Figure (cartoon, helix red, strand yellow):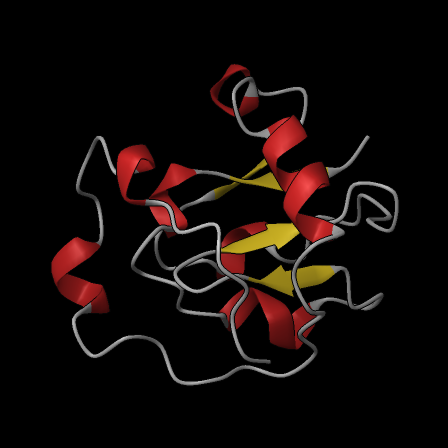
Length: 110
């Protein structure tokens, strides 16, 4: 099992989760984070730290469309081990639905 970052992270990218991860399994895209499922130890400490409520166990039905996306981008994007600055308008995007179409495939800056 692993945890998965979902649509709620897009354009929010608060990064509180990165600070608590004991195995540094987060990877950063231009406007979203993902978790490498092969590195995640299923400890769950990241889930309650996410202000956008974007992280769920892979057994949760809300992750169905996101498991493979996390796997794919975690090998394409750089690893992030420290919290960075979230976007200035992150709070404006928090909780907005239908953000999947806004996902950038570009890597971010750790």
